Length: 193
Image (cartoon, rainbow, N blue to C red; front, side):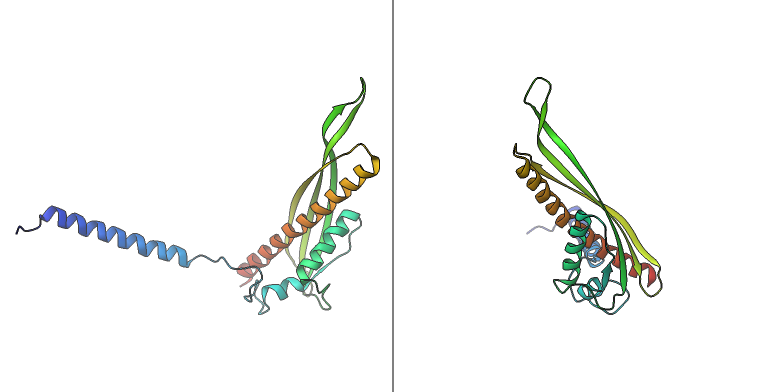
């Protein structure tokens, strides 16, 4: 039997120490992670209400356009989980929605005429979230969603395709705004608390 070489023993001890330090460091990093489900029972802001109850306490002011109303309706449904607007809101949301419709592709039907064959609808939503009691602005932001559609030659079919694209964009914009507002409530609780 031979004795272990001192160089290999020192090297293995050093490698074990490095591995142990790496393990401790990664555990410390993972423990600082604050990822959680949006609809968990934990509160978003400093109040004791759950995240879904806090989002359900947001009242959305009326808007003037058809696409804005679609976004507003989807937000009301998403915030209240189908229950409608809150009776006594804690937050007030001012919503603005603008729409841009563009032709994306053209096909030549005559010598001097081009006919669009595809289009896109871009909805841009701006919001301001305020506390109802104090009137203080908690957060504001802007999100955009683009939805594409085909333009058939029939006029009504082209109109209906554009309306369907607007509805899709409104649904997606409402989802993006809902997530953004939930993040804003979390950030507000960290700065207020």
